[in-house]
Amino acid sequence: MLNIVLFGPPGSGKGTQSEKIIEHYGLTHFSTGDMLRAELAAETELGLRAKSIMEKGELVPDDIIIGMIRKRITGQKDARGFIFDGFPRTVAQAEALDKLLDELGMQINVMLGLEVDRQELIDRLLKRGNEQGRSDDNLETIENRIRVYEDQTSPVMGYYQGQGKYRGVDGIGSIEDIFSRLSGIIDNL
Image 1 (spheres, rainbow, N blue to C red):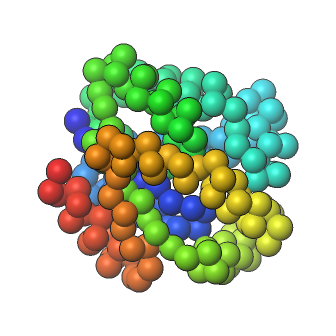
Image 2: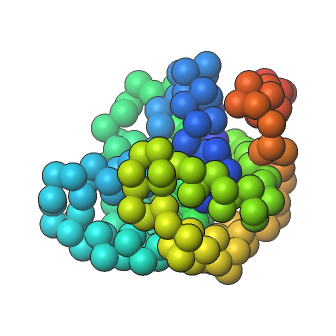
Image 3: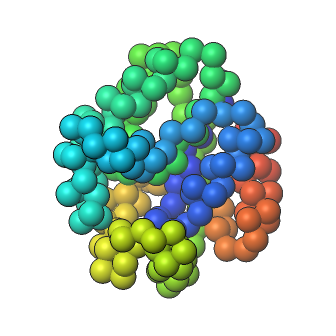
């Protein structure tokens, strides 16, 4: 079973590249952002709890995310593997994910980190906000999300580096060029 963490700051292209990886390798996608947006759209209790947190660009509590992931993994017995897009975001989440996967007889094989400079991230997210009408893609929220990433999320790289599982990938270039870099690493696992 192939389990990948696709990692990078907001706007690094995780969503785009995860779609290509899913299509090419037949993995099941875990996007906590998509899962939470679905909860918001359905106006579930979870969605309402998460709404105010997400609008500020802050992180949703770990217990909510891990619970969603456990439910989804155990419901996918025939999966070829999983790609985690935007999760884990903290070392505590990485530890909880490792514990959960260990309980289920699985592990993370690799963390692929998309590396993109700050101004490019801001430009990409502002463009996405305009094109998709996403109110959470405004300059103030974007800058806060990047700060949260730098302060709370980037240490996750060190966690996986300590396990010998982190691989940094240049996230600048065409979608196909970036995918080629990612698949080169995956194919050599």
